[in-house]
Length: 185
Image 1 (spheres, one colour):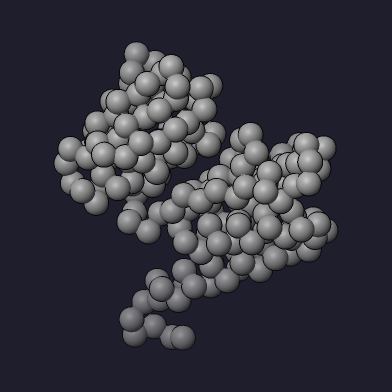
Image 2 (cartoon, rainbow, N blue to C red; image 1 turned 90 degrees about the vertical axis):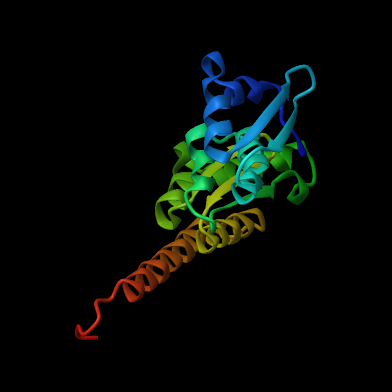
């Protein structure tokens, strides 16, 4: 059994309307959730497949970090799906600096965050003092690198170029992987 602490304002999202979301997570990840709505503590107990059960706490953590339940459940699509968090607060000197850095990650009208998602294929959420990422390992790495570049003060244009480069790399690797046998190279 693992215990995960999530923010008070995310407990309702985790439970869902009439407990619907909680039941879906329990069924899909083969776990049992014991949610303490007083302090935000969630006990996650594996009741079925132990490998699926390992994803249970990650799904709860992802919802706690601002992901919609359907996005968090993407962690079950594939054994390789990862959930990662970039701590914006750790890269900030004070509250004002954190607000500015968070703004850089979101971008004007949310454009920077959207581009991170579009060009990598990962899901990206900025909630509180963290940036959460769900995706395949290379997608998560690309978003983490882009976020760290922005937090270090890199110009947005340079970060967009980096993301486009990564996008083309991943697309090319995908084509290599799906090449038909006996076809021309």
